[in-house]
Length: 207
Image (tube, rainbow, N blue to C red; front, side, top):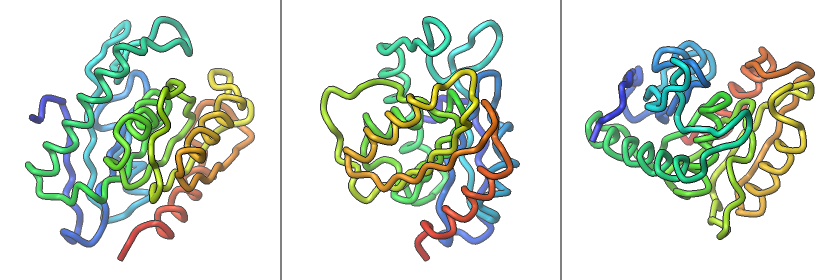
């Protein structure tokens, strides 16, 4: 059921490229990351939903109790809801559900990480920009065959470097192939991260 406000941009050549699931940060919408998607995966298909939670007028993908303190019950529900949306969208638009790569920034990266941990196998891979570990999983998922690129800033005022390191550790322990790209800056998408994602996707994408 396609119950998210969203945009779908079909690929230039059907079946020739993966579909990027674009997940905006707090205050963004379904249009925000389309330009980023076009930069890192020219010609790919894009599925870009808008988060349903609104915090002081700003759309998000799940609730939080304070800065960096997540409502874990809501996160679990919203993760399942988003996963079901992706599956339904694959049927509606006819893209390959086994070749979906999430690209998320901040809040969007955090729910993408939650999808990896809670719905292993749903995502072929993920680009997580300015992420943190959304929760400590009680059971270790099997992420063998899943590739993840993490882009983060060493002076990010919102996400400590220790959180990025812990997320990478948890994903690696679950069997994911994780690449971490550090930038000197803060909570933003740096040009170096765009270039890293472009190269990473080119090496990852099956032909």
